[in-house]
Length: 244
Image (cartoon, helix red, strand yellow):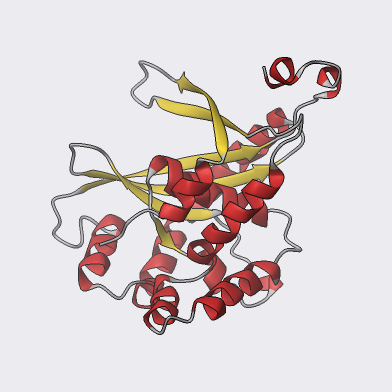
């Protein structure tokens, strides 16, 4: 049975939830934009705490489930952590990598949408970087037999407007590549999942009409945008005023 990452849920708890904004209400495609910021410690973001929690998330993000299960079975915890960090570090020259890790963390830890395929585990050289979506997850709608196959896009920008603009442009370009993405997942199911029930579910989500399943599936998109704020005017305020 596929479960969202508990480590990701713990990492999300390191952030302060600000607000949830309804978008496109009454249009049949309503969605939410959720705002978070790191916890504040002494008029600074508590970056160290976030780094430590993301190190725990890195394993599920970087490695396939079968690889994780293999190391866990033999209790090779140090090797497991080393492999995940090496996989991530080898591609740190790609500036989008941190955004992808945040995207994974919030999809798993906040939305409860498990990752279907670890794209990081497919990367063998910098040139092999998968050009389509930054993450592929699925989400089962409550009290329904409908699933959302989520194609994720992550942007880390100083300016939030530029981040959203680029994210929507990327999604527009990726729409034509969704079938390639599905075929990529299908080709990696045996490498990603060991449980036959999980394999059957993922196949049904990818191709519901071909597998005789009664579930309904809709393609969906999720965006993570990390951005900066100007706090220069707050340095003379008290701690409470600064946080506000």
